[in-house]
Image (cartoon, rainbow, N blue to C red; front, top):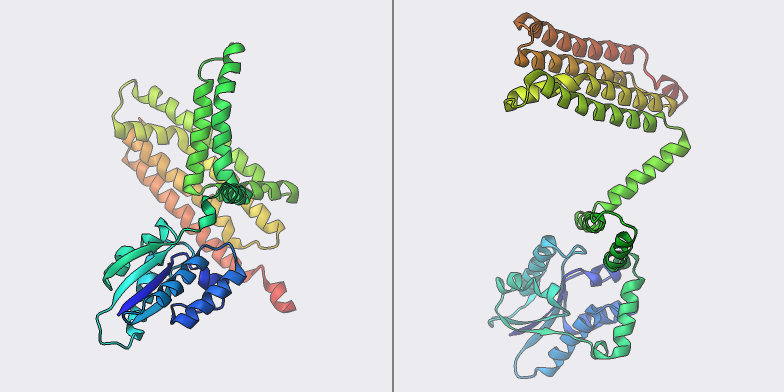
Length: 363
C-alpha cells in the first residue's frame, strides 16, 4: 500500500482551520485544503494538500491513501516529535495487511527536515517538493519581495543590517575628510555586530520591555528608578575602589585569592550601600502602591549582614593587623545576628500588624 503523506511542519492547517490532525482520507484532505485556502490563500501548504490529492487520484495500479500530518508553530524539535506521533496514528488507522510505503509531499527544505523521523516509521519511496509556477515569473518575484518587506519583523531583520553595511563606506570617507580617527569603521562594525547579536539571541524584546519600564517609571513617579541609577553608580565606584585596593594592599603581582579578597575588601562597602539604596527605593514604591509588607524591610538588613560577613572574611584573608581570628568570629556572628533579628522582628510585626487587614474587613 502506498501512503501519500503531506507534511505541514509549522501546523498552519491546525492553527488556521478547525480541522484536527492528522487528516486521513482523500475527501477529508481535499476539504482541509479548501478550508486552508479559504483562511489563507497565500499559504504554500494549500498546494501541498492539493498535490497530495492529485497524486492519490493519479495512481491506479495499487491501493493508495493520502493523509496530512502537522507539527507545531515553532517548527522545532517538538514539531518533529508531533509529526512522528501523527504518522504513528495514521499508520495505526490503515486497515491493511500489506506493507506500507510512503511518498512525502512538502513545500520546502524546512518541512523536509522531518524526513528522518518519518523514515524511522515507514519506508519512503520518494519526496515531492511543491513549487508554484508563478514564483518563477518576475512579477511574482516582485510581489513576493514586497510581501516579505511588508512584514515589520522581516523588514527590521533584513533592511537594518543592509542599511548599516551601505553606510560604512560613506561614513568612513566622511571620517577621513574630517580628520577623525580611523577607529570610526571599527565602531560602526561593532554596532552592526551588537545588533546582529541582539537579534540572534532574541534580546530585542527584553530591551523593549526594559525601556518601557523606564518610561513608565519616569511618568508614574517611581523613586525606584532613581535609586537604581544611584545604586549602579555606587557599584561602579565600588569596582574602582576594589581595583585600587588590590594595588594598595598587595602590590603589582598579587596571588589570585589575595587579589579577590582585596577587591572584595575595597568594594564591599560601596556594594552594600548600592544594595541598601536599591532596596529602600523598592520598599518606598511598594508602600506608595499600597502593596507594602513588613518582610520587605528585611532586604536592607540582609544586605548589611552579607556586607559585614564579606568584610570580615576579606580582611582575614588579607591578614590585616586588626583582622585576627577573633575579628572574623565577631563579624560572622554579627552578620548572622542581624539577619536573624530582622527576620524575626518583621515576621512578628507582620503577624501583629498585617497590612491587608483593612482590605480583609472590607471584603
